[in-house]
Image (cartoon, rainbow, N blue to C red):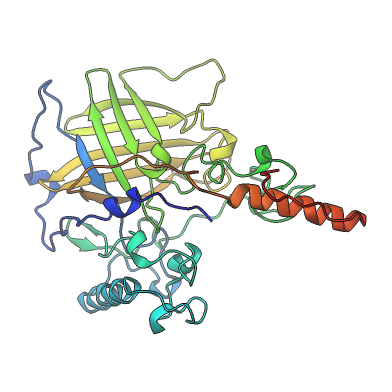
Length: 358
């Protein structure tokens, strides 16, 4: 389990409410910065109750009803109120304070000994886009990821058996380099930085956008990831695949268009990476609304491009250092436990690992 530094609490600041009847993007003129660009800069958040994919019971419904929105947001308020109370050390697992935890909270260690609700910031409002309360961030007709082509090649471990030599679905425990990049704090363990960019459902869904004449920098609070978008540039041809891919951008009127290719296998999206292209569009849609839309394209994996959209809201504060491994004993514990299991399997006497990270 990742142990959060105190700065997590500081990021759980109030977000500006999303207007129920926001003005259409076409009627809003984005302010300009000192160099004449549409001003996207500042601190933003994409935390939301709306999931990436739609609940199947909702079928092709793009939006919630007013009654559904009220119920979802009221339930979240109860979760916040109950989750912020002192935890009863004798409470049943996954049900502190007499309230059954949401799956996202349970996954973040929300039971006794895990995170209290005050450490989490998964969002407390349904996502509105142009005032519409959306049922999913994905905008395919059914709100689901389209099926991949029958013969599409995936990265090892995606939609297939666990790779040979691995002891479980999270990867091999033979050495640290075989663990996931998020677990090792190399990059975030959600898709906050993208592309495409999604809230992770737990915390640190906060961003700082900085603009210059030649670049747009997107700093992500989660693991302090930073994407650099080179304006009016060309994609690299040296075969290197940097973290977050190779992003180039240009202005299309008031919209920043970002095209990313050369995505590394370790950051595959839904099994696709080698021929994956993500096109993102950032548009100021209102004084406190930043519209984000993305298109996913890989002709070797899907029959047609697909995508989604949502809106960032202002973060009334700043983002802080993400001290990912400060006081974190999870990784040495995982590897130490695996070594003990190896010795037990071989019939050797267990060797004490007290005071050691090996």
